[in-house]
Length: 453
Ligand code: GUN
Ligand code: FE
Image 1 (spheres, rainbow, N blue to C red):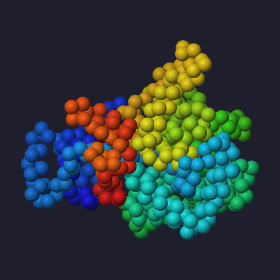
Image 2: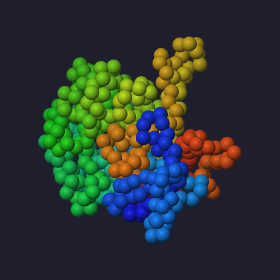
Image 3: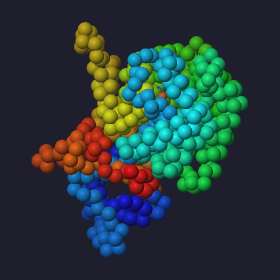
Image 4: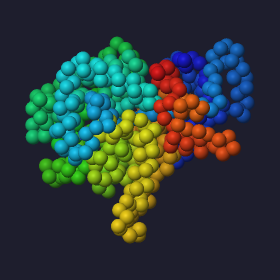
């Protein structure tokens, strides 16, 4: 049911700050006609009862069933939309081989607009059905197909940030899949920004354009410089890959004698609205610089296991106060589910802390510093952390924030979570949701108060 101009009475969870879970119990969430939260009233407040009765009388009150829990919708901070057809395959070769042998040939197919329409339609529907209310998308180099992704998100109601991929370096990109020149890369970027901003169905900016250099190896200096200028001019978001694997991290060091982070900063591509995917091999200076600029990192734990030769030190980044969100990295990671990526984030952090090679003595097996995170951190980066990373009012329940939300029904017949009244209270319910819930438990998905599933 559409919730604009209605009040939802719900129990649930959100995490406005890292490490804290705010538990809602029969909270009244009033949603305006613009899809934003107008007010939240909790039992115990003096006018709670009268507001509830009044909204019930006018028919504006919608009440969640017992056993159903409201959560913020997930913010997937790193998705390659065109790679959905190879999700769950091609995971057995290193990044630089994977790009050439599998990924560039697949992305080149989006020259065919009919293929793009079919593939993007399925992707957006599946992500919404998994509770992903906002996605930060890499598209392909193609103008037409990327416009199809914009149209698809607007039609289906997903909040999305979308970039035409810029890649023009002849040494690193195949002949049939690269921008013809730096001018073409820049012109295509500008054209997509104009398309998104002037789209007749995008008055409320549900879709935003993103300046998207694929990564430094793919781009010439002229393109990187030009994209930095466009980002400054347009005030757009920026996304790219940063220091992902040994090879990718080593590439900038040998081309410039400097890290990805330093070079992105020099090109004007490191700002408050920049999202760096992976960022596994950051130096201490890189972390410092990212913090100074207010840029964000998209942590992609499942992808790290296949393509990164390392695990991103998430806890260290969070403790430094860096902005971090969670990404599936479809299809570098083999799951489109943010819940599965939450579990992955906890699991890889535990392995990073303890180490994994049983032939090494325990004292020297693991990381030097504590590296583990828990379900609360995973939930935070999957929701509010993603909102902070994008500098958008999403990912938490507070007045002024968009009502982007999902319902987990713990009583779903074919669901994968079971609760015991005698045992499961407070944030333990959320813990079980994060560890056990699946698509079968997902009941409703709203973006800006609109029912989208
Ligand atoms: N680096 C450059 N392109 C890609 C990509 O498509 N996926 C991942 N994981 N890393 C990249
Ligand atoms: Fe990626």
